[in-house]
Image 1 (cartoon, rainbow, N blue to C red):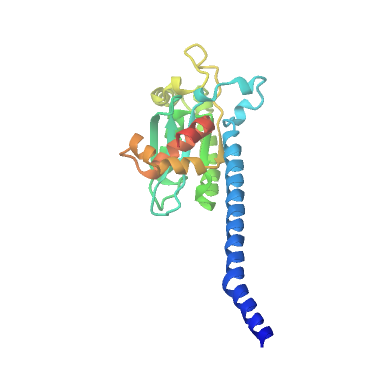
Image 2 (image 1 turned 135 degrees about the vertical axis):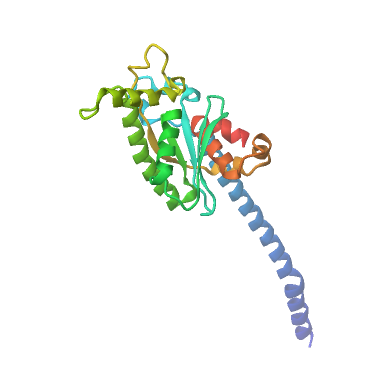
Length: 256
């Protein structure tokens, strides 16, 4: 009988007291371990983002002192591809101080390389003449599609600009003069490295590239982004931040 009573006491102590206590302590240890893993992963990701250097356009890669060129002065266009097909795609050019110079909205459901959009984008590129067009990757497949189409449009815009003073074989003098007059509206001072003395000798080079827009997405939907650009759509703010991030990743990371 006493053995049976002892067995009952032991079972009760194990089930009602010891096992619940073990479970609480184990859950606490696992929670602390998971929390530490999360902190380490976040710290590692933050370190990687903080160590991210400014984007270097392909045109600078073959220069001897390419890493000494201040990226703040490099004209960059940021592109935000929406995740919602009902929202427009934004192209944005920013100044050396990160201020909005100009932007272009491509209506949803339309193609970049057809109709009026093609002419508007080429005109926008000729006006801003960036060394790089950076497309955010949050749009997934849409971002890759936009990147491919923009590459073709950039090549066409670059060809037009660099051949603006070359008269075609089938082009008469009057048509050539009219074509040159059209280029007068594009502002030469916006182009990196250009001044009044070497405007005729400078060749414009530009490339499109994909860029991680995790930080710009934070800014575009943050209270600070709304305060700085209260009248702009979130994706337009994201496009601005993409251009800024390409020029100064650390500055945009701390600002977002």
